[in-house]
Length: 112
Image 1 (spheres, rainbow, N blue to C red):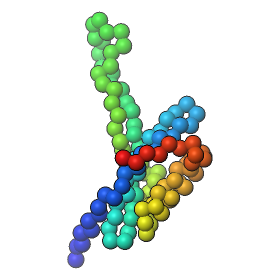
Image 2: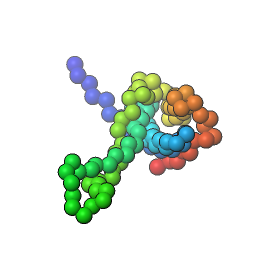
Image 3: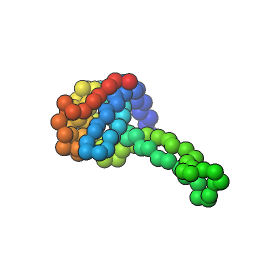
Image 4: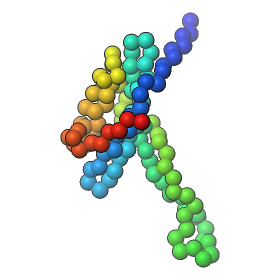
């Protein structure tokens, strides 16, 4: 028999990380189903589109400079499951610290 689980979005956190010459922005969404909490991580990506043909009168034409948030699969969903919202945050912060080898006091976190 098929089952349907409904998860409620409990919190969203944004993390800004500066290391070397690059800035990284992550969004952590925390969902709850009964007593299970899970986190899903997205990373902000920036891109610019340029025409593939010459445009008269334009020195450096750009069609669009955009950003998008994509699911970050370096943070596996099954690794961010816990019994509380705070435990999910702790798991995420441990993983991101290992990934970037930075101290958390250098990480800027804001709640949305």
